[in-house]
Image (cartoon, rainbow, N blue to C red; front, side):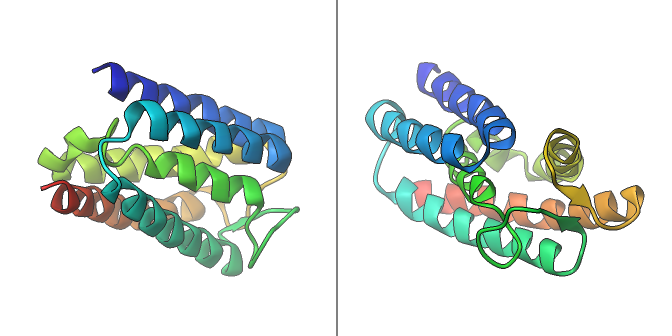
Amino acid sequence: MKKILINLALFQIGWFVCVMGGDVYAVVFTIAALLIHNWLVLSNFVVWKLIGIVVIVGCLWDMLMAQTGVIQYSNTLILGIPLWLVCLWMLFATTFMHGLFWMNRHLPLAVIFAAVLGPASYWLGSNLTDAELGLPLMTSLLIMAVGWALLFPCGIYYAGRLKS
C-alpha cells in the first residue's frame, strides 16, 4: 500500500510541477521521480517496457491532437507538444502497474474514469498554462474523451498482461 501511495503522490505532485513549472522544472522533477520510483516502487524491470510504450503512445496521441487543432501549445518540442507534456506522460505511465493497476480488474470503470478525467486534466491544464483548446470546448472534450476511453483501458489491460 505504501508503494501505491508513493506512486500516486509522485504523479499528482508531478502533474502540478509539469503544468505549472514548465520544461525545466518538469525535467528535473521527472528525473527525480523516476529515480525514486526505481528505488522505492519498482516491482520489476518489465515496468520500464510499459513506461516506454505508454509514453510513445501518449505522445503520439497528443501530437495527433495538436496537429489536428484539438489543443495547441505555444512552446513545443516536437510536432506540436511541449517537453513538459512528455515528462507528464512519463510520470503518468508509472501509475499503470502501481497506483492505477487496480483498474485492470475493472476495465469498464477504467473507460469511464478515462473519458471523464482525461479531458478534465487537459481542460484544467489549458486554464493554468498557455495551452489552448483549438476547437469549441465541448468538441475538444468529446474528442479527448473518446481517445482516452480507448487508450487508457488498453494500457491498463496491457499492464495486466505484462504483470502476469
